[in-house]
Image (tube, rainbow, N blue to C red; front, side):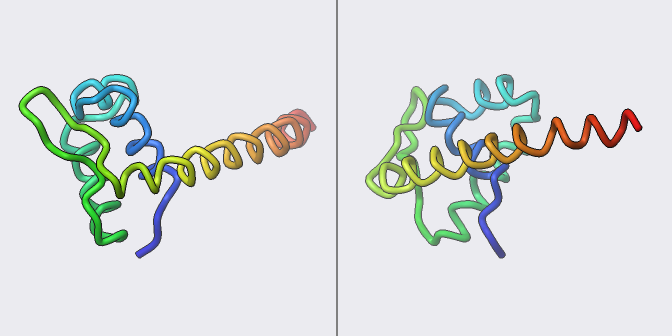
Length: 94
């Protein structure tokens, strides 16, 4: 199984929001779907990425290692969309 941009987006949003429920709301996803995406990512990487606390989730050392890669890959994904979206719109208009 491979890491997906969706999993990285879920990871980053959980980091930003500090809670799965808040991340789910931000991403317009269900709490179970966000939780599953995180579990899948942690399984692929064979590492826990957050410390679970009573008030939410805190990035651990492994999560800190992943965060810059996630940011870079998500930025690259956004750049790809910006490059190809205008071409797609032109193609659809024809």
